[in-house]
Image 1 (cartoon, rainbow, N blue to C red):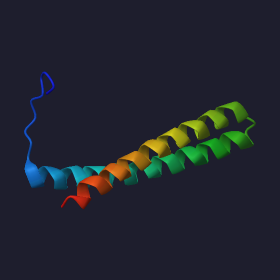
Image 2 (image 1 turned 180 degrees about the horizontal axis):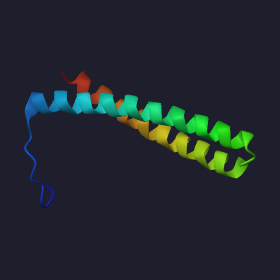
Image 3 (image 1 turned 60 degrees about the vertical axis):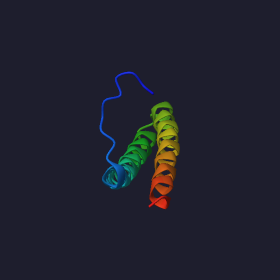
Length: 80
């Protein structure tokens, strides 16, 4: 498959670990996204509109990626 593919496939334990990691990362990412939204809001109030806009754009991409992580979580937990 991939050259240098050296990790061990752990079956059910690996799926549970993957699900736990995806759950943690999703929650963690959402908290950071909220912090970034607050930062953008603060920057807007300071007149830093371009910077605030860029942060909001980044948060939107971040949120899209997080949605994909959650979809992956659904996929692996459906197969249990």
